[in-house]
Length: 325
Image (cartoon, rainbow, N blue to C red; front, top):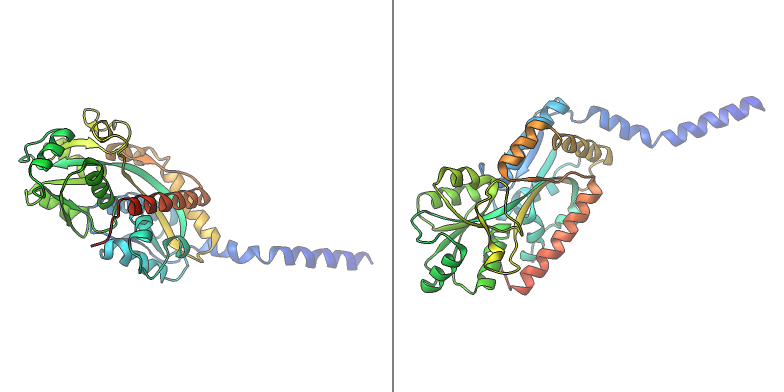
């Protein structure tokens, strides 16, 4: 009888452990090869900067290369689609941002669902947008910018990183709230738009701070305002746009996603390492230089944030009648 009881307990414990063992094994061998971090925009833009910030840390911690793979196109949808269709084994990941939550509403015929088909892994950081102009534009404040635009309807060409990006929504919302006419010029990403702003081919941008701050500090671009409710510690002398256009606010954020169905142990492992990266002194210094605010937390918290962002942008897009042209 005693032997039967011991045998029963052994079999019971083995049965309880069985579902756990594959997960443990998966976590132990992950990653088994290099990992691609897909970025839906060209190199040098804010999404690319986010990917390249975290890639070296993950490469070191996991012992396999984490390589940024730029796949610009369709306002980030091309890269997202690649991740959606990838094997859910953690070896193809997405560097995501508000463009993904915006596209859910902006592109009605999109052939995937960001919320349904991408598993949130971790938040990285938030950044403000900067309303900035080429030095040749005869304005130095938001009120002067609005007055100049009203006196010259359609004359100011504003570049932005493609349909559905936070820059696109921010400009459209500003146009509506300020009652001005601007000519919007879409690009594949912030980097090519910035190149044209620096050479004077376009006159203005609403750009995430990480990709513009070096040019602002060098004096080659003129900042008019930040789009957050308070001033940025990195640009303390730059005004807040809402001081001139009440209740106006915009910004950007970055995070990581994986194909739906990626094992939870891999998602948790990546999340833990990213949260550790955000505590690292060197990365914290770099984030401060970029004017970025870290977004640590578990996957569930990031998932809730994405749902809130999707709802927020859906309301803005519909109320302002913003369309993808």
